[in-house]
Image (cartoon, rainbow, N blue to C red; front, top):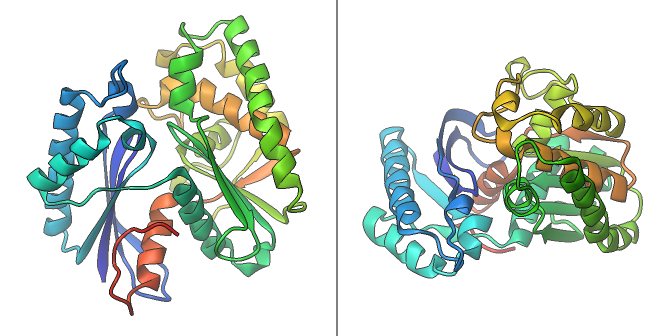
Length: 317
């Protein structure tokens, strides 16, 4: 069957279309991205602006049209932190449903972590053992670990790259003082989480997903995306430390010129790198592997698991 998954994130709205059936490897057929930066369209009162909602409706409508044109049997649509945290999210969701016919479900941070963990588990298999999965989004950091397909724990922290860029930095590039204070603050925020994770034992494999981790790995020498998803890519703490010393002195415009960096995300690369470094330090991780599957693939895999049932929607685990 052909399935579409629509991911309304803090930075982009991403439509992924795959051909798949239960027990098979989902094969990507098409991918469409639109940069909305919804998190930056939240007003001081905490509401998504009318202009932001207008653009979201247009983008969702266009994605639905694309999924129909491409022959999708089902379109699973979900939203993450930007819509989740908007005070007027319920009204925005009702408008999207009324004007586009798309039921946009809001995932909790824990759900994000669980779906991402499922994707990583399916990709690496049971041989990965006690698996630890990290994902840095625009609004949040997800951490999950366990030995089964459903993680033993799944946490979401408000430490996304976009969020930190907006709340911690006031200049481009950020000042040395802003970086130093952010490093110290991140260490304090992650310390209690690290203590909880330590109780679950040392992971056999550590996997990082998301565009932020992929970009950081690419900038430290990992293979480009053109090499395919099965090429092993790693990010080391030493390599990341050297990279931060370099990119923290560059403006967003200069960062956008680097190979492997999306122009739409260049402005939050430094913050994302600091979150990655702080997480690796807090969890004593000298190296992690970059996984090709993440949240969208997790949603697709869960949908395929349900093909013999009647519930074909994105739901909480």
